[in-house]
Length: 315
Image 1 (cartoon, rainbow, N blue to C red):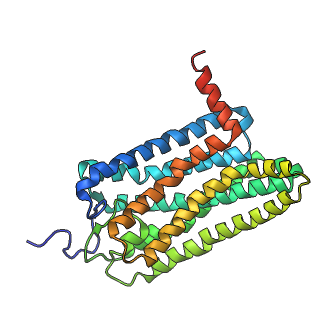
Image 2 (image 1 turned 180 degrees about the horizontal axis):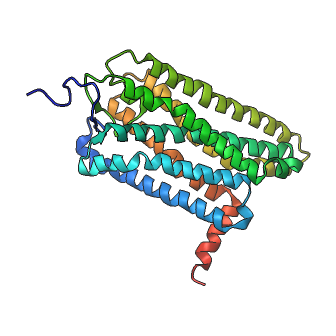
Image 3 (image 1 turned 90 degrees about the vertical axis):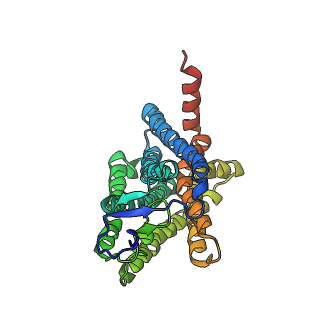
């Protein structure tokens, strides 16, 4: 009897997620750090949302964008990690075609949205430092809502072609995905037709959406640094630059691992597949885990509120 995973089919009812090929015997042990990272991400991001909601002093543009970032991190991690852990713990490798497309869409949509939120936060820092007298009139609550909706609309529309393109391709070789989640390029690679449209569109999203976000952030910080260096005293320069540290750390956490992974994927042909996948999985969880820690440690208002909660919870 032929293997059901490699028989001819046009529209597969299910895909098979392999987890980390070659390391199946170690799946249970591999799951432990990922489970800890996921729990940390959930607790950290919900804590940020709770603290901002409960502290009236944090009801401002910077913290509203931080809440959007926390929600985005929660969606990105939750769209992938529960199924990943099910594979590692229960060998639950099957995912139906529609669920795979939904996972693919939410993962890529909110990843693009996270990039847009960093742009919005860079704009907030630019106005606060370069034009502080107009900050409260430019970034009003309605303006923040409109920016958030614009980021959401942009990401949802940009990523929308992904599942539609994936759905139209014929799949006649295999339905095995050699990783623990449905990523766009991983599914496209299973098609048995010319998929250059999907590949070119994915490249367009990286260059013209993520690339433009990086350029805008770089331009914002060029102006911010010029404004900081024009301040009269060293103390004023350090204090003003300190308001940007959290944002800069979060940006580096998001973009640098992404750049490293992209370079490794394209030029690291001699790197074992299981190492590629491990690095990719760690990269996906780094921003959701580290962002709450960065902002919790570096932002005085959040840190003070957390300390107050812990020290007064019994009173």
